[in-house]
Length: 215
Ligand code: SF4
Image (tube, rainbow, N blue to C red; front, side):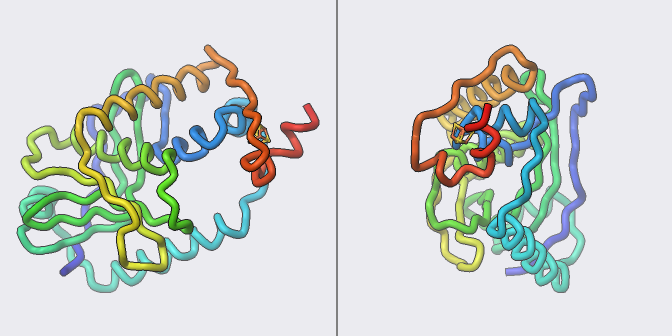
């Protein structure tokens, strides 16, 4: 395996479209109201220790990758039959009146496919994380429509090399993420105020609970 440093890629950039980041889909699915508080009402709350640890782990992995990586083109990367990887890949495109921009933790390619990998602190493949990776897959397919290898969504626990979840990206996953992006866009545009959820388990762990419960 070797590392390839890829150029950031932004196509069909449209500044008039609302900007959405795939990483928002995790918190959006956790509780749409918490997403509304943070991203529409602009409520600021401090990052948790787990979030800070996650940022540090990503940085460490990127530094290791950069020590060995060589520059390469997207075409040779996708065409590779040997296992190659790239990390912290920044890309964006306008899709369905949305400017979708994201940074993919890792993309791996071998002769059998393209693997869009997200490193998470938890070993649980939460639905919101799956949607986040589908959004990256949607971006890859939109920017590179002639890709002829299957694309897989993959979740890894950040401190372990093994995959904890892997799934072929197909039309049903694309429909799911397009639907979620439309719903998220409506909330951002103020067309819809989401309801608070009534799930004690989630609310207990929520970073915004003191704001939400004192409204
Ligand atoms: S406390 Fe519960 S309802 Fe309120 S924002 Fe947090 S998760 Fe959502």
